[in-house]
Length: 165
Image 1 (cartoon, one colour):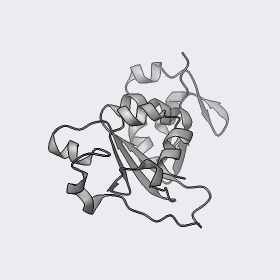
Image 2 (cartoon, helix red, strand yellow; image 1 turned 90 degrees about the horizontal axis):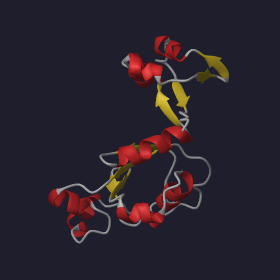
Image 3 (cartoon, one colour; image 1 turned 180 degrees about the horizontal axis):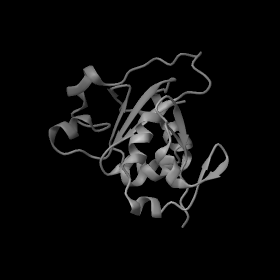
Image 4 (cartoon, one colour; image 1 turned 30 degrees about the vertical axis):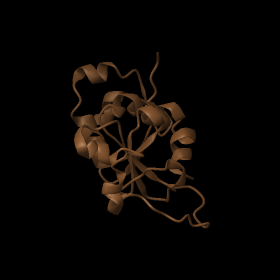
């Protein structure tokens, strides 16, 4: 699917949000101007950013007047008709987008390296754990604080966070 389809259908972002807030998109290290013609492959890395300051920000912004200055790092691809099926995509979010998209990604579910999850959980304070109302591990109820004591190093972990309003 295209980057536009991924962002709107899979992540649920509106076209207005893409047009006004998501100013810079990189796909596999290349700046993307046309989200509809950039196609995601298995193992792709997509980076999303709101507006960045200065000439660099103006140059990297989608559809920028200065885009010609970065033609060597702009995304160009011919779609391969055989590229179909499930793809794993690493999504990196920066600056102001973290507040908007962090929750969206965590609610949809993410895969995280076990080592990274272990470090994250091991560094949480009591306030964090007081806010955890419950946890499921492989479909079974567990004490949330027990997750910080588990060895996750050799695994990829599927993690989904639900928030009660």
